[in-house]
Length: 372
Image 1 (cartoon, rainbow, N blue to C red):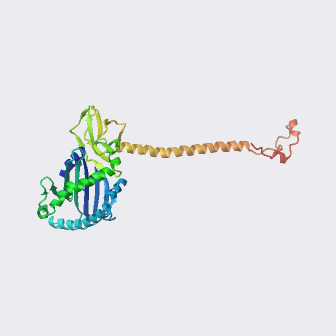
Image 2: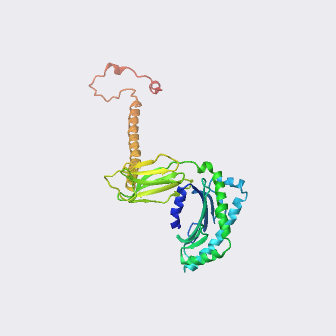
Image 3: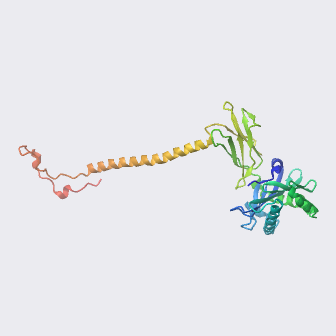
């Protein structure tokens, strides 16, 4: 499922790389998607998920422990936001039906997404805001906060644009994006200061599906989000032949990003470089077959492990059998039956040695096995 907001990605990336702090909510309404809630709303501060609501739980809950501190400033925060999400859930369901009519669709899998939030510069005090909506992963309509007007990206959105511009809530929206939202952003930043100002270095891996596939440099588990990942060739940053993916959040509040090197010159020296905001030193991983993880190498390693898994127990079993045989022979030799007297099997003409006429010890004495 596409996320939409295509033209917004670059703007949001620039916000994250600037001195702006951000708070945003992403709401997703869907129809006929198996094992997926009809309505989902997730709140973020500086890209870290802080709140969660879905139509199954019907409750807004914190994603980080420190978010609960908000009740000291706003005791009804959770109750009020839960009520808002329940109301939005019903509104979105109707909106999907309206969109079906405008696009001449008859049911099926569809999504409506809304992303809205604000940014605040903790140095200059400048604030900004945004609201953008998408239908089936494509831009639909957005609010231009500079001119306070709606921009329609589809002909089907013109009706919505005209309706919303006639409403008298534009002043409230202006107040929300310039006053209410930044105030809550500042409260969350204060409550989560220790968490949001920490620095966590990433784990870097070089991956390749096949020997002819692009080489992927994958960085995960880093914080903050402000990071750059790129490839170098012979010490120079590559601008061509490289594809960089969008930075994505992990479930634990950290982030991940990947950069793909489409083709490599065997005679050149390549390096994957990771730069994290607030960290002066780069993390550099040279492209080397010894550290490159590929499907072929992983499969070969699995075959080697499988062979070892079979060979080691077999070797142990053979060793056990050999030891058991040695012990058996040793015990058989040590505890062999003692002959009490000679059997009359010698030839009659053979003369018996003198010691053969000595009477044996009693059976009870000879049968005692010494304790070792």
